[in-house]
Image (cartoon, rainbow, N blue to C red):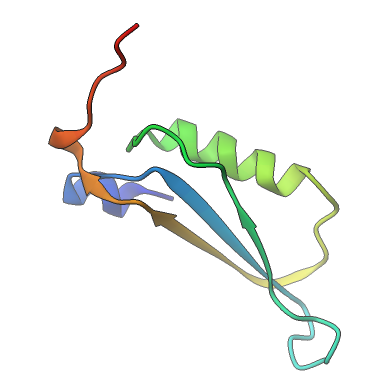
Length: 85
C-alpha cells in the first residue's frame, strides 16, 4: 500500500479508505469514506496494513467495484521525530 511513499522517502500520518460499492451507478450506492485517527507519521507498511484492516473491520463491507487508499499528512521521512519514550 504505502510502497510509493516509502520509495519517495515520505511518511504519512493518516489513512483514508474510499469504498466504491458494486453497482456504482445506483443512487443508493455512493462511495463511503473511512478515515483513521491522526497518528505519528510513519512509512511502515505493517502499520498501515493493520490500520486499513481495522477500518474495514468496523462495519460490514458491501461488495465493491474498487477500493481507494490515500495516505495523507505526508512529510519527508527524515524529518519525522522519533518517539521520546
